[in-house]
Length: 223
Image 1 (tube, rainbow, N blue to C red):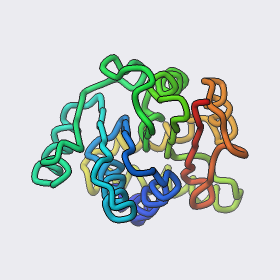
Image 2 (cartoon, rainbow, N blue to C red):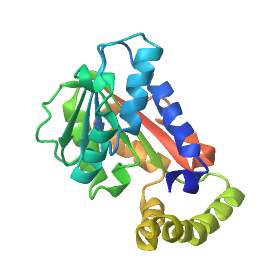
Image 3 (cartoon, one colour):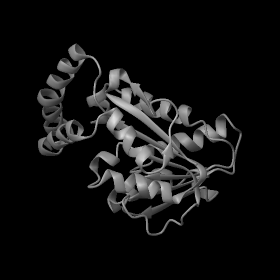
């Protein structure tokens, strides 16, 4: 469904997300709402291939145990798992009870914060668990910044995506919710202001639009 909805572009967004992160060797990453591990995979692969680094690690957290099980299956035979560079935990992004304060270098959440009841609490919690100098990064659907493209995107979203959900996943309702949740999520500037409200410092506007604003990368530093 992700490939069908985005014509595969979600893969490019996630690749760009990791390149913008550009983590140094030895990074300790907390990937929240990490699902089946798309970000964790790209992060560890980047560290191996670009930094020749075998010391970075990921702790992947998700509130959904079934999603985590799929992630565990995906990585079960990987060298990363065998080398204990990857771990999994059930957790609520709004209250990460098992994560110590000032304990991680990077915090990522990709296409997950939109589904949380209180995004501000999620950002505040990210600030708590990051080390001083640590970086918060979020990849999320956002608001298209071109009126003509936005109109076409609305037609695709409300007319086509639910039909694809029914056809491919036999689940129209969930994908109708997906579209509606995207429209209800704060726009880029509002979300960037929420990140600054938590105490993060941002560079410039604090976000980068992808594909005319269909998605956006948000970033902030704990200083």
